[in-house]
Length: 392
Image (cartoon, rainbow, N blue to C red; front, side):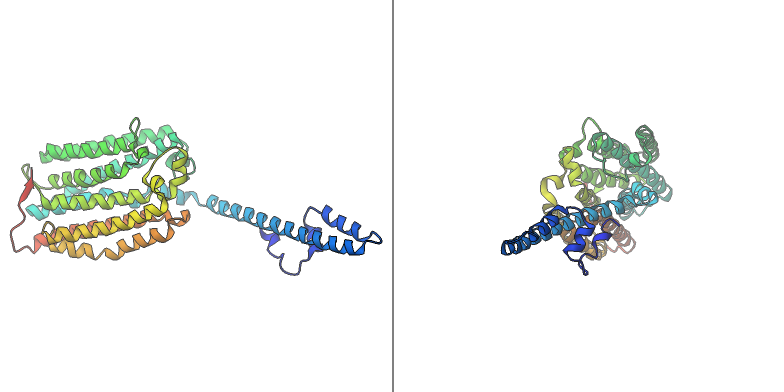
């Protein structure tokens, strides 16, 4: 609305009309006084033209600055107009909870591929417990980023939305306790202390990633921690818990699967930094995107997507992964290419690049589901001996 009075300046307005609607009239009045002086008409005419051009240039700059100022306010108004319901939806981060689902699904599928056994009730308990752990990660991350000022301009932060740092912090740690009790319950029931140790390592990675006094995310090592937590630690632990036997060995198939899960999960975290670079810089948080810049980050995403699918085909050629998993995962290649191209095109546009992490969630979910489906299909239609265990 603020820019509306300036929209029609180009439609029949001359300098006289501008002087009636805008300030700075003194220069015009001096023009008329010069014209009224006798015996100096040539000079007056020249002076009038020079001052007229000067006045027009002045108003042109004034109009441009005012329009830019108005556009800025319009953009701010658009940001302000985001409804609280949308902000709450963003704060819940429901799509992000696929990072709890995929490691369990892939781990369970790898156990089924190895043993032919599956425990549905155990799967559900592990899923609920893992969701509690992820909720703790999200809520505590909001609390500690609020403390450091990283979330100062983040309207969807739970602390900013509800205004209670203490309440959010308490609820986050309550969820962690409940989640760990659930994981421990299943581990004891399965008689697998190895899996409980691996899950404790995964949770510890989450703790040192964001919680004081460590806060390793501020040093830019969040992605390696994310890879280890959701890949080798969590996926392998869920594989052991779904095995039905205490002595199940860790095979090359589950190791390869956990590495792929770790890479796709880390890609989500990496892309979540694109729209937060300025805020991270302001509080001294050296995320990978702060170090690389958006263009360098976009190139990393392109290489990472290509690396995931290259690794998939290498593992398939080496028969570490079954052929069915390779084929089904290859069908998600268009999604991976879209993620890479989207980031390449929009890495400078903060309003659009915000969606990059959600496209990575889509890739992570589809790739993980395809990997798990391939493992299940390979067991159901297997005609040759399963791979031997290689570790522990």
